[in-house]
Length: 530
Image 1 (cartoon, rainbow, N blue to C red):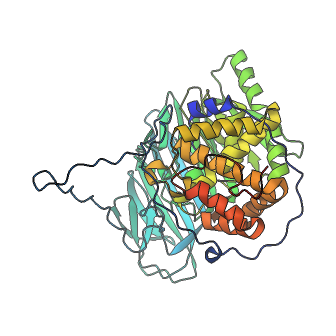
Image 2 (cartoon, rainbow, N blue to C red; image 1 turned 90 degrees about the vertical axis):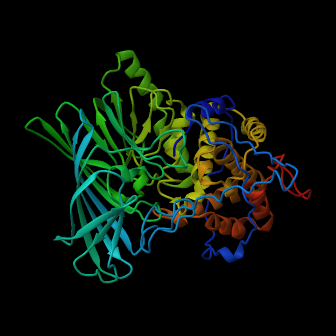
Image 3 (tube, rainbow, N blue to C red; image 1 turned 180 degrees about the horizontal axis):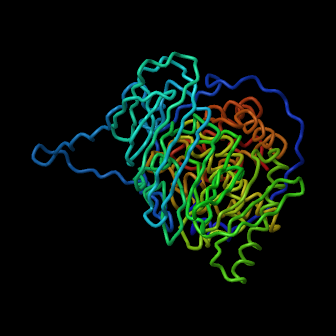
């Protein structure tokens, strides 16, 4: 997901090295159960919000105590509770109760967008193809802002209303359980970015900057530009058709299946056959040149470079992106084949302060093209994109794996020492009082010391404890078990329990949940050490 550039640039200075064994055969696992791994998870310490350019170190807020006297003690006003969503609205996420919906599974999204870049306006028709899992008298979709002009269910006009970020659809007759149905929504307007409590450093969704439109949605921003079941637990395939002025490029996820020009307008249609979470859907509009290369195995890599670059800048950009095939090969050696039909990077002609792993076409500003960040966004193809968080509180599974794998790649690429790198990460995380990544609050969703650094240290400590063979067997099982879907921390814990044993689980728990961060990367018992 988003990667704070200055913090990663600092981490790059610690770049390190590790070697891993070749992919090995695996032992079949029984289905994971949460009953096998029951842990008490203490409440996370509070920390300040991260900032846009350089995430502030997380610090534990000191308790303020005063003498309790009748004249001075005043009870604080009760916190205003967010109203619960109505039945059917919300997917049950612990951080975002209003995100996603229940009663149906989406199988495919068909987006047809007419975009006026100068006005930053869209006219859209989104058709949601879904299967009902319960009788639906009301169908909820997530949509923020924009004006809805018409809704149809299975081709028949339906009544609709709006509440908060919910589009509430009343079909003329209930949709029976277990049947396929469609909801077609016609809408228009200027997308308004989302103020998301988990992303305090930038409003998310649909961006328009310096003649370029791009999307960065994680976690809730996609509802600023199309209606959806906006939670990563419900993935679907996508077809995204974008019509723009002829002189600009329109890029998106998956493969470009057609591109036509008529009456001064260009229509590009993109399709992805692989399930995708809504937060990873992408629209890029601007003046870009397409550059193609392939891996040795024939995987298409298509990068989009600003047309405004000088020859020297263009070559420097392409040189920076030349690490991509090698990084793909490195991750395939650890994890298995790259999960999608194509990969690539769209490079913006300006700085944005983060990068984003939009599925198959990552987003970078012009300042994030360094091997560590390129590898970080690529690693999300396996962890984050193919295996998505089952709940947004499981964010460490996204960022910890992407961050750690990127450092392993960087170590292999640059020939540095992984121990020195992790020692530096440990010092930085301890200095920032990194809160437990397994019990962050929504406001700490992208807290760098916790969700990136301490999560990375969690995986490195597990790696040291188990050794290459068992550690990567666990990682591959975690990936293959949930590829194309989503996973939770208990899912991962169960795999660690089966393959690593109780000592490994205790180590994992101490790093994920202990308010006091471990002071060493050594094993938690004196019986063994590296």
